Image (cartoon, rainbow, N blue to C red; front, side):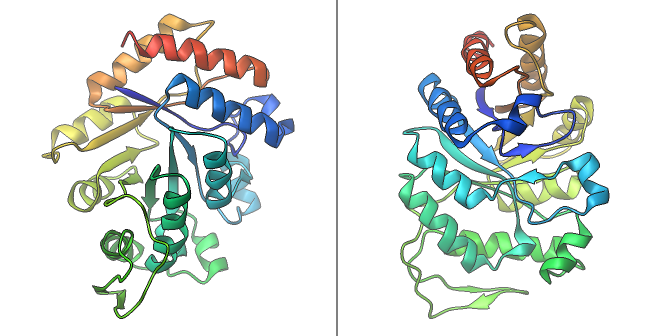
Length: 283
């Protein structure tokens, strides 16, 4: 089982983010990325929200760095670690916009992009951006197909229900022949979307038992990624608990764990990463 990191600082959800993150600097973020890269972690993440309604910020948090700028910055400070959107809201973007912007990110990072996508869950944010809330699941399905057809081609062509285009040129485009696409969500529909149209599933807001039951009810494609998240844990102070959590996710079907760790400072966070790396090698 591979180990990825839910990147600190760039998303600060109440109850998940540590106190030091609110005053962390860009140099702290670069340092964490380099340490994670040197230790061999699989990926770093960044989520997407443009604007959070105040009523939702109390539970979702208000800090969401822009994923394109953030992952581009992290690409410049790392060599091998993958860069994952977790997740990009499909309804906020035209597929060709995704293909151009994130294809460029894949190019400048040397082919390290993982495109995590979702249908979105904040109606007020959709309204703010003029995005279509109704039929967003069907639109997302069409968008994934369009992105898949367009991401790695200089002359993309797609004819679908909501998106229809040809005779276009995109340069640069993604370096990877097929950029991995992971679908985020918490419903059977998100899992179905992932198995039919993408390369992996990133569930959230579900218990391990619920996830295991949902996975048991479907036929997973070959080499399909199941990316399961840990709660914030302490690898140094509670190594046994963390190891048990990773084993629990592995037994539920995880191919990759998306880890969150607690810390008192950036120094402590980097120490936690070293401890986590050692634990992961024994799972």
